[in-house]
Image (cartoon, rainbow, N blue to C red; front, side, top):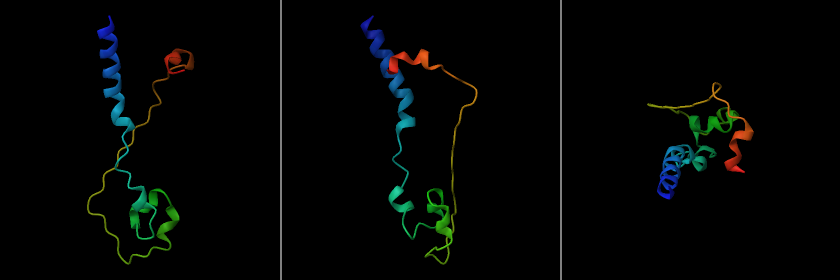
Length: 81
């Protein structure tokens, strides 16, 4: 029985781990005066006073996932408290 509990915990951690990783955000670069188009996500007004004459992105990829289908009531999440 105890082995099954560790297996469930390990599976849960492996499932949630990719959502906790944020190593590629480049926040130091994005807040710079020379961030160009990369800084628009944090400060949209940075394109008004850009220090760069040209800024060209060859390849850009963005992924976002939101959920409006599944709802879990707070009473069911008692293991988090």
